[in-house]
Image 1: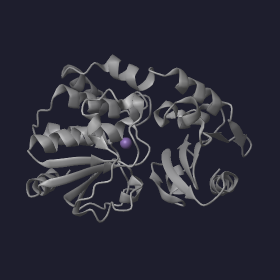
Image 2: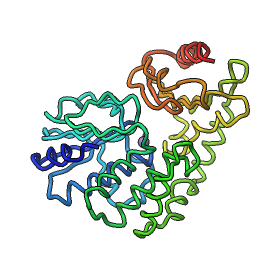
Image 3: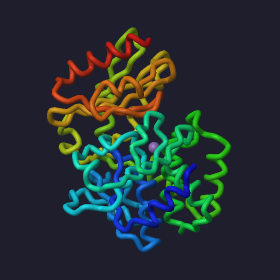
Length: 317
Ligand SMILES: [Mn+2]
């Protein structure tokens, strides 16, 4: 990993805007908060901007209120895009023009290496794992709340140490973060076992939309527009549901569709045979891993977008 180049770019720059992909998850939150802490510890001028507001379930993280969704009006020396294959994943049209230089720290295999400095390792389970390595290998001593943020990202992106990206290194990092004082049971409870009544109600509604296609090899669930608002839930309440459809026996691909205005956001999950990362690139802002990806369909109805997705998937089944 080219830590020297990263350190040099940080040393020669003063102002930084940290950003990440739409649809928050614990890895993008954890990597942004830990990198924010690091830059601030060096006395840098740092802001975080994300298009989406931070869901309720992530609100326990210290400094999470530093993640703003108010578009910055000034320029920065460096735009640091974390946990994202490309700047378009931010959902923000100024991502490539807000600064002259870019930092790209990510673990998605389709990362376009868009950074002035790109620290990309597709074999890493989480961006938080890469940031942990940066801290560890450069003897950067970080506080307990940063360890907590890193742990949450690693916990989530390994599916709670259950996906096949769960390596010996992951357990070693988890052990180190635990020794640094992270309350691992608390992080689990906050991320996975703190449902609101509204959240569980909305989940039951989403479950009721489950349908199977392609001889029961594709499962699709839909979060209809307005449901979250109607029940007082937020996007965090349905996060992770994309993993559920593909747990049905015989299902190869799970799809979670979220229509918003003229757009439909899709989360795609594959058991193995179908490369949903490549399929996602056929839509705008699409990208991700072979087994887990996301994309946005613009201008198509839900039926049209699903038909397009199913035809792409069926050619690989
Ligand atoms: Mn990630």
